[in-house]
Image 1 (cartoon, rainbow, N blue to C red):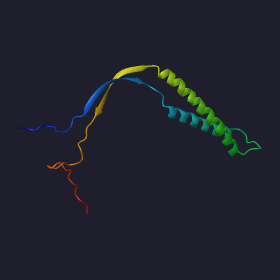
Image 2 (cartoon, helix red, strand yellow):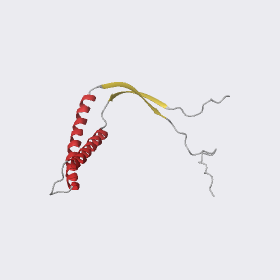
Image 3 (cartoon, rainbow, N blue to C red):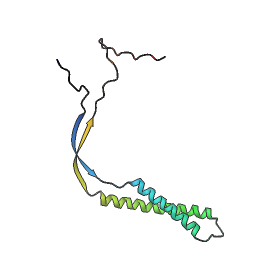
Image 4 (cartoon, rainbow, N blue to C red):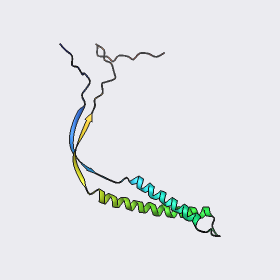
Length: 121
């Protein structure tokens, strides 16, 4: 009697119809908005003349709070608009799910008991 050439377990493949919809990268766009707000705050702080009542560090802190919030909100608005425009088109396609079966790690002896692993010194 001959043995099979490949005795490894075969992966289980199933096919399904799925809807694929593109979406914008939310965190990247929000981070870009926050970064632009920080850059604008930095540039405006040191481009404008210094005031007597506040130091440049205080002006930078206030500007940072204002512009990071403002540009972050604008970036959030851009994300919502992009999601509306890009997310309209839905494509139906076939997806394959491959489930690979692993061989059990336990060795089975002739009596049916699990073999003990070798001891380490």
